[in-house]
Length: 99
Image (cartoon, rainbow, N blue to C red; front, side, top):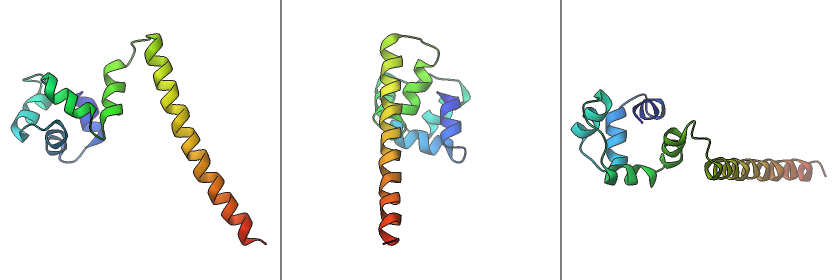
């Protein structure tokens, strides 16, 4: 989790982690130093934050369980479909401008 936090928030890592986990900045600093482990409430708060999917990916990395593979695949499909729809709309607008 610490690597994920540093990757997501290379600047002010402890501040970003503490605000999303709803813990003190000092508690976040202790996690990042490896001196303490996060509690269940803090993990739940992180999972419910904008960093939730990245955290879940970090936790599940290498698990190989069927449900996780299917879930992750579903999320990736949904993301690609959103991108595809965005690009389709842009293309339609460009084509309209050519008329």
